[in-house]
Image 1 (cartoon, rainbow, N blue to C red):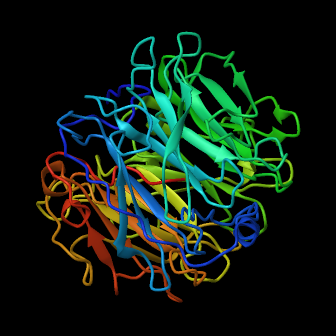
Image 2: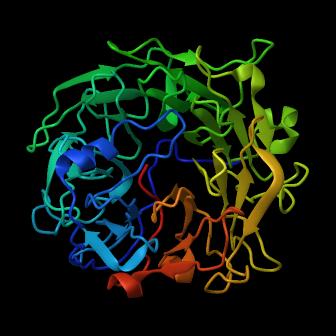
Length: 496
């Protein structure tokens, strides 16, 4: 049976000195027109992070283990900006707590970038970036902090502290979700506190980081959150929250918890059940998106961890699996849940112990057909004798949900992808889908935190009418960013 440190964020390792690079100037655009473009998306639409307001989606990434100013494990975040031709490697930014205008200073083990999420918190028309630092000293111990980096015409610039962990609810900063959870038009931030409770910060936010109001959703059932994600599951225009949880010390009992958003905040949580009243099996990772194109955001759960007793009744759990749960007016439709693994017909590869299929899950339309496709990280995939080289698999969306028909697999040995697969690269350790060139087809962004001895790297694969393609792909790492690569684990996660 496997062991796992519950509630741990991204592992902290030795890493690099980060360099702040000027962000690109935005194209001319009025704040009002930008705000209109960034209004709440449809239930299943991929949310666009546009930090500089030029109309193209940007992608933020993390290196939470990086050394900054000689401080091991201080961490940094970075941004690659979108453009008409896609992700622009020349338009880059690296931000740490030593960057001018960012609160505090880099300290050993802060893990700045433990989790990141993007939303326009102050309503000025520019997307902002919320950054968790799970091990930051909050004044009462290393209970973590949340910091906002403000969007502007020149990209992310300056910031403020949103919250600190406390002794009442516990540590924060390694699990984040953003959305309008009360339907008032302001963007809200939710973080897991002490692995068990939810701290909610309701916007709009002031420039000093203060929220319109704050609240705590306390757990009363002795469960622990493994991940959280935001999405309008019921299609009512108010963002809902989905969490993957386990029951107290019984880590094997992985569930899917649904918290409906309402005008008064979150309604009572519900555990998703199937047609027989059994709890739908959950996992360690969760995301949302409209896979079946019905106007409701669906839930996709990644379950990469295997070896527990419940796997006896889940043959697809070998090597990892995902669970698809469609949304609907009454909430998650557990009766229509579907599971997929590499042993499912048509899915590339074959399930093997340790593959970690489902370590990362992302949803967006990669081919412009209106259906959300699912990018699945398989960082433990062996390629011949290259153990844990890693792979990413894309399942197409359809009217009946995910389909293996037309599914694709990508590794560093795929023709057109720069680099060569090596053992422990962990290609697919993180994934994101974002439309950087605004053509209606999302690019696939892949993190490989184990690349080159844990230096880490990021790949971008274009979308096309045929879906994700290696043709025209690009990669960037410490050389492009101007940072020291040593054990940085660049590409550990992306903005949500």
